[in-house]
Image 1 (cartoon, rainbow, N blue to C red):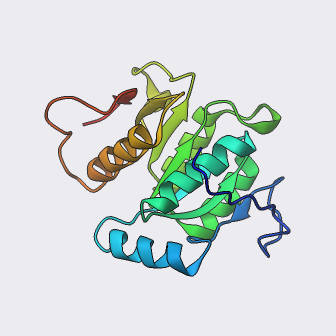
Image 2: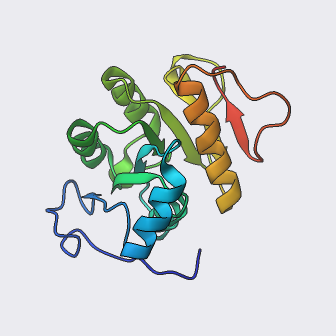
Image 3: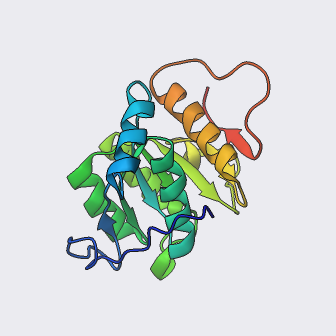
Length: 181
């Protein structure tokens, strides 16, 4: 985790909780963060929904993404909260854990997101097999544990693929598996 702390709760963010602690997120925590983000994000900013049931992991992912200029539109620990945020925010990409709060499945959520036209990159310690309809709607999977560099590189590959670009030539970021090219 980076040295900067951005801990907030649903009530601390000024938003009503949706499905547990799911909250719309602010893209930047300070004016300085906003300036750095705007300078870096002019051509590559992506609106991302984080679906992760471990609060500290979700916070770390959000910190890495916003530090790189992406906009985290919200975080959710479960399927209901994720669907509410997805419908309201229409993210460009969703980062989804496989095992969610309340026993919800990331595979089921990926199918829901597919119906909404929202691409999914699984970020989990339990990447599903590459065959079958269960992963048909997902771009790929980034294995946990990961570091900031791996996460940002995986998001860049997912963005490229969802925008119709080719799979990167050569080596993929560590821990990333692509399901569709």
